[in-house]
Image (tube, rainbow, N blue to C red; front, side, top):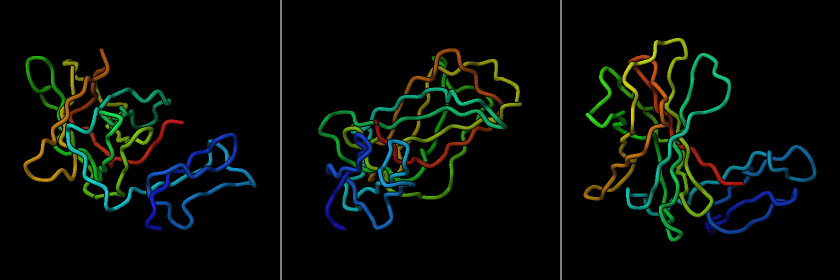
Length: 188
């Protein structure tokens, strides 16, 4: 379908309410009604404009899920203004952790190599990526104050650098962290 749509689960009913291309088989449900926990895939329209730093606000939170082998921090990519409508595709690039004095020493953030699916950033639609660290690694004594990263797919000559506050008092563990692809999410 070339028409833009957004899928929302409202009171157990799937509603088409605008923006994002819906493809055959993209709405999955296990029963006669779609619940808020049903899997919904919304793909950004390939004609959407790539996001720039002016379009995006990032926030970082610690994932509160019980850690297993890895602990994660979530990076949320949300619209900077109500008028924002753009896409991100791929992982954050050149991510680094910083204190007020400079880079956190001895820590490298690697990124996934793939491109992933386009992610629509608009209204209640946003992107999520994760920074993973090995739970059993020792904590770095230097606590980050911020993360800096480059948004993927920004056209040359446009601002692509984002800065966000790191969760207060949260150390990083080990010397090698991993940034995942940006994936689609929505407020609900």
